[in-house]
Structures are given as C-alpha cells and as structure tokens.
Image (tube, rainbow, N blue to C red; front, side):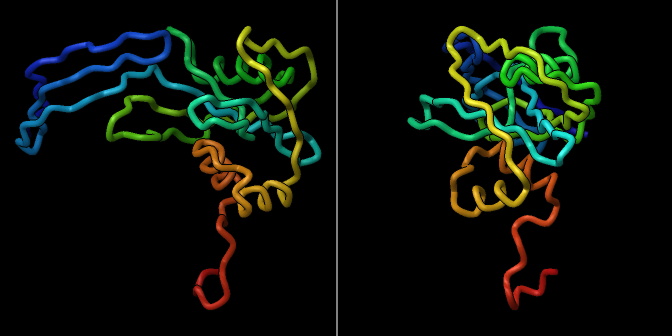
Length: 185
C-alpha cells in the first residue's frame, strides 16, 4: 500500500503556539504537491456541566475574530500532558471550577486542510468552585446557561465559535431542531 512521502519540509515561521511549514510531498494516491501546514500541538475543549444541568461558558475577546465570543472552556495541550489533565487545568484556570469526573467524548480536526491541530472534547461533571487562575493576557467572563438559552444563542448566531457549536451539538444530539416537512424527527 502506498505511503505518504515527504520530499522536503521548510519551517517558515515558529511561534509560541504555531509553526508554519511548507512541505513538498507525494500523497499516498501519488499526487505530488506543495502544502502549507500550520503545526499545532493539539488542544482540549471542556464541556463543564453543573449539577442543575446548566453548562458553563466563558466569554473573552478574540483578536482574530475582532469580537468577544461565548465559548466552551478550551486551551492547548502542554508537552507530555494528558487530555484529561489538560481539561482539569484549563477548567480551573478559566472558570475556577474543579471537576471530580472528566471523560473524553471525541476528537476532531477543526481545519485539516491546513492545520495539524486535533481538538479533544471532554465533559466535566461534579464541579466545585475554587479560584480561577487565568493567564496574564486573559480577561474572562464566566456564565452559566440552561440548554434552552444555549439553543437560542446558537439559533441567533450569538454562539459562532466552531468548537463550541460542535461540543454543544454533540451534547444536544438533535441539533438543529427539525423543520416542518423536513422528514426529521
């Protein structure tokens, strides 16, 4: 079976979070191509579920989007860190909550055409409040939302962050709501 062959790889930029590379490759199908790749070490996305069923989101300014966004708790994996350890760390840092139970739900590639990042979605339950410890450059607002509120926020476009939409859709499992005559339940 044919394998990927990397003919050459050149690092164009190396930053704190990402590295940009230009790779000349031969894909397993035989296609010869030059690919621009943003290398990222991976991240964790946390769905914090409170005892009353509400979900915790954080709101912070996102420069690339030029606006503040409501999002699930998320952050990068540190070298050698497990997904569940990263989920607990990010949850405490951003919200001040500790979780007694975390479980990995699924993983996905947010933009596999150019980005190596793999996002790991984790559910956190049995939460107790402690003290948040945001990073120096983070200004975070924490909110608790019922499912009905979150659905309205999704429908109105108030939640427009991809990882948050995917995580909430997974939890709700029936998103979007069926339209009359669509044949969906």
